[in-house]
Image (cartoon, rainbow, N blue to C red; front, side, top):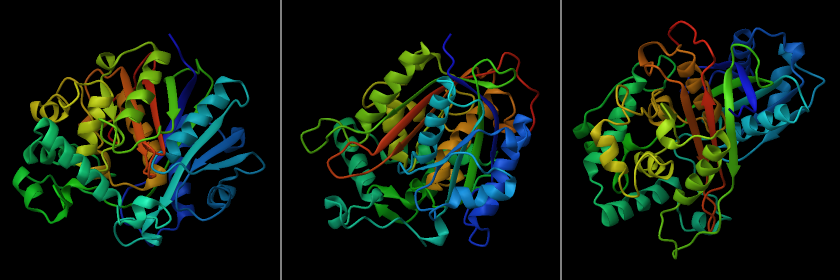
Length: 386
């Protein structure tokens, strides 16, 4: 059995538009919960790896000093939506090589401080200069899938219904109402064929995890973690944007962990848009190319199905604070594997996978993707609601 590190504690804030809560207070909430959960003293932390995209310079250092976490290396990573899972990946690497004994991985984002709606395209990027914001890129992927594989509007909408249904059992999620297929399809069109309820919301939040050496008693085992950036990609590719980077990263993570997709009990994946989950479940190996729409429609990825995907509600229900999203996914799988997910608990969950994909840069198949394989402790805890 491989094990590169142990997750001893996790914590998150609530998710949503919280413009009156400064970043430092969100950090305090998430880190305090993670430290208490790990049963350590803040002074035991040897290093911090933090992920943020739009955070102010020094946001991690300025936030952590009032928790007594100072005088240690604090490294901030920007890797688009995969920023905090990149921080988690680097934290695991530093533990596995013996560089540090106790590491804090942190994600923080206060998006309402910068945006009132969708993130605008970056004009210095060729696609951005043409107005291709992320909804447009995903809308084109969905259109391609409908042409190539017959993915239906109802299958796309089913992802939203499923994940919002899961999110109803997550008190920390931004959205607490489950729409019908009709309501999803009749919500305002954003980027055809994707409607409003098929697009995630911006959010403010923080999430954290305490990492310790492999074999630390009671912790969630980190079997593997893989981080890759996308290869060159253009109109000559037979696969839609983002498919190959997820497939390559997950293959490396599975090989390191010595498992296959079929061994995994529960997944948290990057569902910024409904088509994103459909593509990702294929690239992760849950189904064949073009089979993602039928997979969600079958109930396979619902709680109670064979391999639930996004029991937290995913980005569609929980919200998407870019720099905090990856560690929120880590926290959810940790709760699932410890049997602490309350009404959304996946029965007998032993192996979990987190996938976070960040991008897009014109000509590249995604800025970054992180896939990590996690395993339950030897003895699961009792069920308590999170």
